[in-house]
Length: 227
Image 1 (cartoon, rainbow, N blue to C red):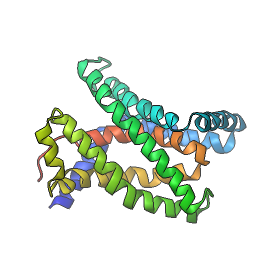
Image 2 (image 1 turned 90 degrees about the horizontal axis):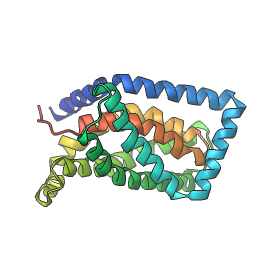
Image 3 (image 1 turned 30 degrees about the vertical axis):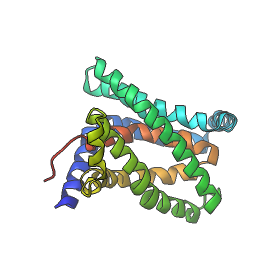
Image 4 (image 1 turned 90 degrees about the vertical axis):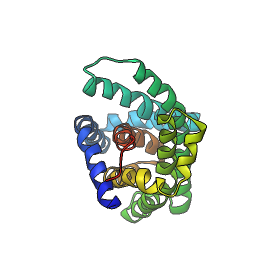
């Protein structure tokens, strides 16, 4: 029952965010095509890679603040609020930005570890190994568990008593598992694209995907009743 409920909630999240998702997925296809076929695009991305190398983890922090906290709010205002911002959007951004910035640093560190473990080549064997570790270890047991826990706590008003709910036995099945089902649908092809890119461009590419993923994540991770 919980598995079927997780699939239902994940599908609802993807459907509710179909329009902004199609926009971002289209941008990703254009991005990849330009990277492969257009020398000027590769030169610009080379400058981005140099900037990331110079500023280090700060690049990951601010990339995730923009893509995971700011851009989703802009998309939500544009697609779901008829272009009208409100105080809730500001509160959502201010409470999400520090968390996603720190997650950007964590993801950047994880990508660097993956290079140390498997190398930086873009052959299919290396990409497959990185994808498996990413999606079946790091994602369910670290990144999505932390994300679901933090936003469940935020939605409960950051009350100390509500933090205990995160550690109850059913939290993973009720809140993390539905998120993970949707994550596999989006991020399995997504991280293959990320790991295809040069190492210094992996965070910028992941940031683009992150914007759509956050919309789906917040929809799925809203308080709900198990079926």
